[in-house]
Amino acid sequence: MNPPALRVSGLCVSYGAIEAVKGIDLEVRSGELVALIGANGAGKTSCLKAITGLLPWGGSIELFEQPVRGVPAHQLLLRGLALVPEGRGMFARMTVEENLQMGAFTRGDAQVAHDLEQMYQSFPRLKERSRQLAGTLSGGEQQMLALARALTLNPRLLLLDEPMEGLAPIIVKEMMAVIRQVVADGGMTVILVEQHAKLALSLTSQAIVLERGRIAHRSDSASLLRDADALNRLVALA
Picture 1 (cartoon, one colour):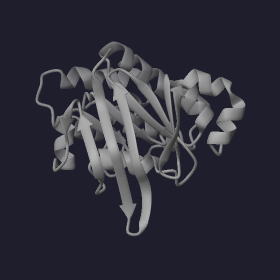
Picture 2 (tube, helix red, strand yellow):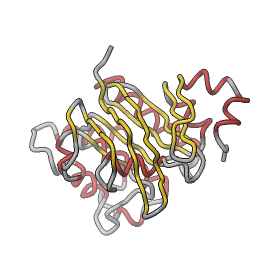
Picture 3 (cartoon, rainbow, N blue to C red):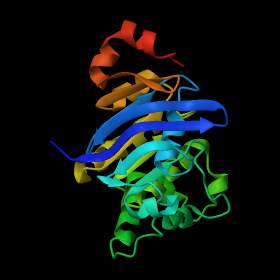
């Protein structure tokens, strides 16, 4: 059995008096592709922001069996954690290539140039637009760039927050093919937060369903996808 990439115990996140995440326990093993699904307000994004150090949290978080309490968010990058945030977070006034280079800014190895070229091979449209300002790309192209930028960090754990929102099916298929290939090639671990439950389940191997800040269900994704009644009870489908 692979070692855990992420272990969370008693995770709590609050916004003032509002408790968004209520004592969650979860473990994701290296090389897994996991869906974290649930209705709006279930606590999905709050979990990711806590794991990446972007929100105050209570409980315990271990990344690759090392506690992260007190570790600044930017130092988690050095431990192999990358986030593709909701809304993409482009450097709009920088070119596509400059955005990709920013993704690899923590790396000093000779493999960076090779990995950038690999991203261009995976997303040919980005190569065609390498000198174009990121803010002028289409929504789908920006999402490709957000994913490619995160992958140039060469992460061990990749967190994706609503990456499929508003995208054409062909772009979704292209992006997930890249993610699956990276997982297969290098054992990268991926947690996919997605409101569209059926899509997320079709792309992953394991499923965790959040409901009002708590885990309501865990199973393999295929089993939950086959059980329409259970899925409809657990998640408000978009």
